[in-house]
Length: 488
Ligand SMILES: [Zn+2]
Image 1 (cartoon, protein in one colour):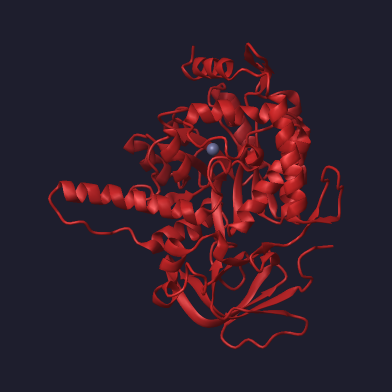
Image 2 (cartoon, rainbow, N blue to C red; image 1 turned 90 degrees about the vertical axis):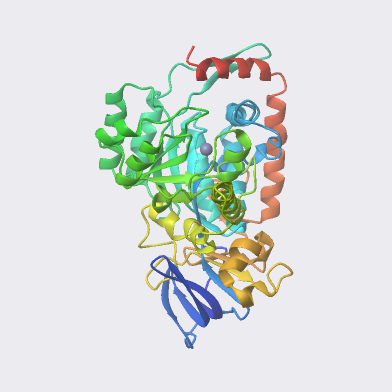
């Protein structure tokens, strides 16, 4: 039973379609797009509605491929608003470390609210680096929430340094990063993936580079052989430390199924190694520029071909990926122009809006190994689609001139009229549609709930998490973090 309109066929009529021809985006005006089940069946003019099809009038609407966010921590909704003036270490102390205060039910509501914020913003696929794994139940809650939400995600199961005790005077970590239950659950997830009607895939989130090398190789090899198609890791040269991509390459770990998030502050050689191994990077401009992680690299000439974009922490910034693309593009333009002007030339703009659009769509699809399934509007691909209103105050006139400019420079979440994921309408008339929850705390399974229900639950959870943290010393946490990161 599904909450979104039951029609198995949806005809998008007379839209302005943004269709890829390789890396070139073609604007197809007055075209129809027919969805059957999960797939885009046909794109042409004048399609006659098949019997029983839901017809959506897309006159004055831009029909875009859904956006792909390649780095996000979807569980963090309850921590939103905390990080206004935070650097990376402040974020760790007041945000990330509070996964310690989340019970599985809190994960469920944080994760669900995170997924729905993404859908609201036109994102249809998210790589979820799920670094909150305090117990098997935490991971299960996250998977159930992702499955309930309707979003396409890679749930990247992660072993984390877990806090053992956090009091008014001290913070102590558990020595064991990979407990037995973690491996047992991994085996079970490998056997049972994908989840949520085949829309939630299993990935591996991995940041434990200090483990013995053989253990790392054995774990990655086992995961690859058991069907994990995506591996992701943080690489922040000037904060948490770089990743030895040369060793990864030599050990045959660095392959096209790897996404390295940020890759800031890296030597030039590392971009070459990543590129030559066909791996990908994910740039997340808001957190990178704010938290001292370094400059976004997605538009660098030596890594652009293997770049994509992500949100990182929706606890810190909006999950609207158009904002990230815009920020990343304008930052890169500024760097280029700065060089040009300093060398005595006039300013010029070489980075085009089409490149930004591609980084959020087809490049993201390549990064997650699904170029043949998502990332563009094409017959036979999965129906992950975002429809923008072109007559809003922001969009009017821009679309008439250049629909790509309208999206990349003028659009925001309020202009998103409809979002379709896997052939199902998840946002309509600018409002999220009700969802059918699975294993939801208080609601159980097969219950239909609205966004307002999620609001009530996530707010209650936030208050509980906050209360649990009242006696925990931020100073003690900071001290312990400095000690760990300095390797003492
Ligand atoms: Zn991250």
